[in-house]
Image (cartoon, rainbow, N blue to C red; front, side, top):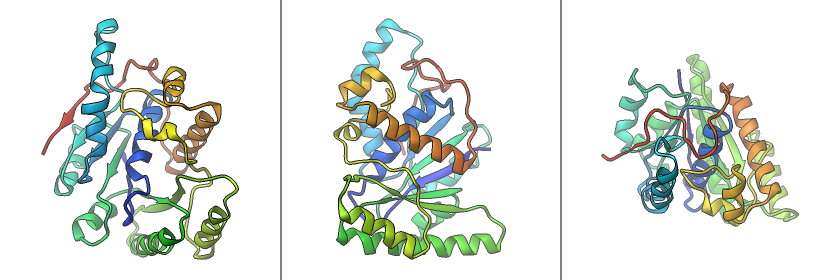
Amino acid sequence: MAKIISFATQKGGSGKSTLALVLAAPLATEYGLRIAVLDCDYQQSIVKTREQVDADNFEELLKTNPAAQYPYDVFALGLGQVFDFIDDPEKDYDLIIVDVPGRADGDDVFNVLTACDAVIVPLVSDYLDRASTAEFMNILEAIKKSADTHGIAFQYFGLSTKRVAGRREEKQMDDYIDGLGLARFNSYLSNRVAYSRASTLYSLLNPAWLRYAGGNKETADEIRRLCDELVERLDLPTRKAAPAGTGKNSTASTDSN
């Protein structure tokens, strides 16, 4: 049965769609996971990346490798369609990633969050973001307590994004979240331009794409640490991955509402 996670926050610009982009490709190509990304955000950043940014590269790839596929599937869905998707027995995935809208003011968002095995909240250390993010995580803590009471598996984690080494606000954010007793990842993503160039076709662990995106060994090490921690915390299976750039899912698709 697929594990379901979402990247969620009530604060825009925190990097939740970027997190999905950065992690999905390496989890598919390096860890061998069958992955579906459900893009439910109004901005459709992940769908647009595939359709507008990656399409030309994919066409070029097909010229040399006619059997090439995208490494994971992307679906544009409304929040009301998520349950039909995850309940469909024909959907054979190890991990379903849901990118929800950046708000916390509707039952539709919270209904989807409660269907997840884990919710991952981007933590941005700016002072104005801190209280809003903690408020959202306290809501998730309430959901977790209710889920525990009913014997339902549910986890949530904060995950530092756009982290700047040595900045005192980063430590303040860590101390703030820890002081509230809220869960967070030990790994993080720094404020790197390479992450803004994440692709739905190539993993940033692919050396050629990493160089093209302006990344380096530290970038790759950061992604690996985060992937390893995610796999461990969610008890995800890992398999021998397909060769980089060949894809591994049976289909490469972008569905519309």
